Length: 282
Image (cartoon, rainbow, N blue to C red; front, side, top):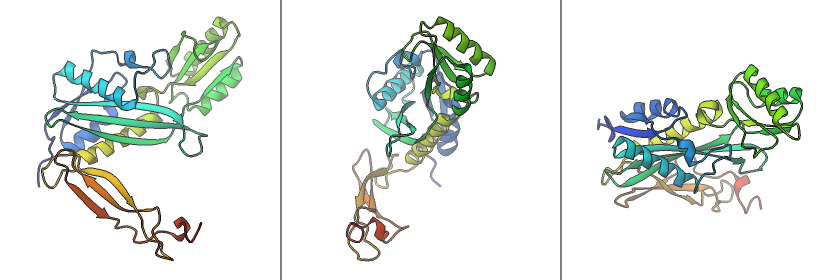
């Protein structure tokens, strides 16, 4: 059996919020590598979820910046960075949603590979002057396993208490915030930093699993890792009328280096459900 490409390799991971505890076990076990946490840089200076420091650029750009800093600090040619994003769910727009991106940079081969995962999450907020309402909010937000952020006055007030993980600390921060606020109200929200948010850590783990699968898949022509789906071809025939549907009939795997492509027909479904057919079910 061929040894994994990254067996024995050291990979830099810049993080200060405990992401190595989620990412390293997945990649180390799958690839035989050694993911190493890099410290010495405050990643909060690149942007915070509490909006006191805005993130520059989009999700991939932010991850690339982190990975590059970690590689520079460690002197390693292989680097990792994780970057999360939060917003409404992409279907109905009604539920909080978490998208996690894990970027791997290989300067030895001159390539980047990403792993992604997304799902519903805990990311809610409340502005209130009532402790009982605050306590109900906290329970709904998954507290204390999911930590909370408290600030007086409004969502953009710079006086922030992060990482609250006990009822004693939360109640004290609430009453202090209410005393500080000119309007007597306190803004509460989930702390979505990775070490403070178990639901987000699970999404990061799923992104790491996808990345590990990609890096363990090598091009059959040149052997470069990251041989993965580049395109999905629709046209799976309807089970009733045989007309092509918008369902996927094949995937196109591609190499990041030599450009080799491999079209793979669907093996788990030869026909589409008529309910997905524009002719049978217009």
